[in-house]
Length: 435
Image (cartoon, rainbow, N blue to C red; front, side, top):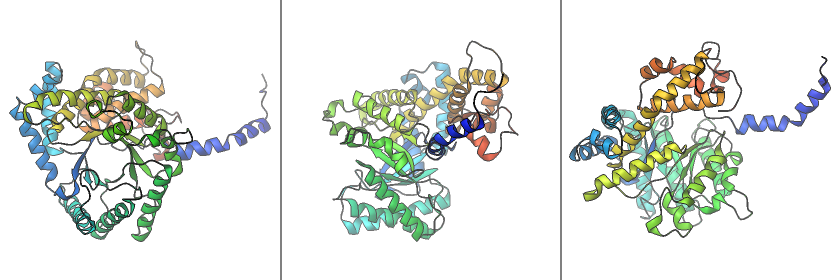
């Protein structure tokens, strides 16, 4: 049967959709497949030393030992004995080798207002210490600063701290690969545009490649979720500065307080928190911008260690189940519950996910007939587990029949197109769907 659409018809449709094609290519590139840290630790900027990460790891391990060990912690978090036994040695290794994945030297709430002379000196000292930690190999994979917000009373101070920190780092040599800058208490897209201008100028001054200085946006104000005109500014952020924002981080307590939630009920699981985080998920879907949940201020100290662990472990698990793969930690004793809950999440789900991946790759019929979008989600789940240390690549190969490169392409199929790896890895989906 002859086709009904002529070449002119097809060309007319292409012309009508040209703007849509450009929008999808430019603004919805999908995740780039790089590692996302599972947590961010915040410490006052003046307390950072190159040994801080190892000190936190030692304190975390000591707290776990004082309360019966990591396997007992697993049982406190509700893990079955076999799972607790499998998780404990991996958490012990993590606390020794990489206790902090992402560290933020805080010049905002955790630092306060100390006067310009003191903060100038601390900004330079912080950058010098970060450079030293990177040089000696003791820095976490991701590290950076949170400066003050861009509202009028703190704007000049914020920009000066940002300038001094980045300029000092740049003068010390190549910037850390995992450098992260955090802009807090954002209320409008104009503040994000101003941040884009600021980092663009720093790139020009220091001869850095355009786009080198990406930044996180903290979602801590209701005005960013719902603007005065009834639209959602947070949904506009990826598009007003395309490619510049690396992540959105939810701020538990500032956001809750702004909505008049009393202190007793401010929580990562309050309904207002869930609503904001669902909007954030919708806003960045397909853009490649990552998401992070906030923190709990109930820390494991004194007589309340085990109750705090139970709460923290439950909240970590809750975030993971809802697609928030990162969160904040504020105290060394939160590291054991963070890693135990996270590792259990991935190890518990590995057998079923790996089996479904194996069936998908081998085109084996099973009880679940997965399509490419689901296969991407399964592969992404497994890949995150490998990247954080919860599972080993050799386990994945044994269970799913794919190596790490194949797993990465299954999770992020657009990488196959951009890198030309599709031919060498025939199991990578050939769909152009956005990941």
